[in-house]
Length: 134
Image 1 (cartoon, helix red, strand yellow):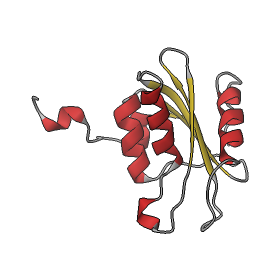
Image 2 (cartoon, one colour; image 1 turned 120 degrees about the vertical axis):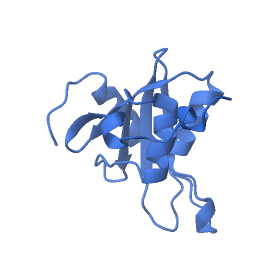
Image 3 (cartoon, helix red, strand yellow; image 1 turned 45 degrees about the vertical axis):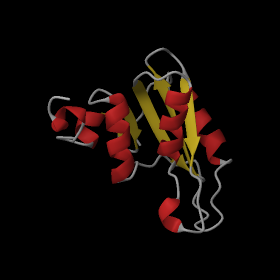
Image 4 (tube, helix red, strand yellow; image 1 turned 60 degrees about the horizontal axis):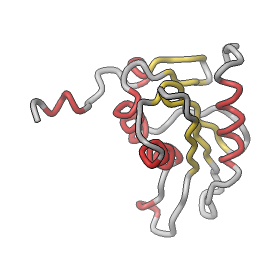
């Protein structure tokens, strides 16, 4: 992984690693933790929660976005996701869409290759503007 500045990434990595250990993953044993900063300075986290009916499993990013709105909303500015072995991982396609909607093209994502804006993680993203006038 490319060297990244300590702040805010060290704080986010610590939070993501801690919450990954709380994941409920009895079926896959693949624990995931996510952490992000909000534009008002808050830190939000989420972990995956599996279900015996696999299709209703919740990704860590879903919990993170829920925490974002439960805590008052805002826009995500920095995001990282790790697995249970503390390795940085990329969100799945569904979660990239979710993060794009709540952080926009300028959301900074820590990837194994370094810090990447959401506009590169999910180019030409479908979002609220794609739906036309409300």
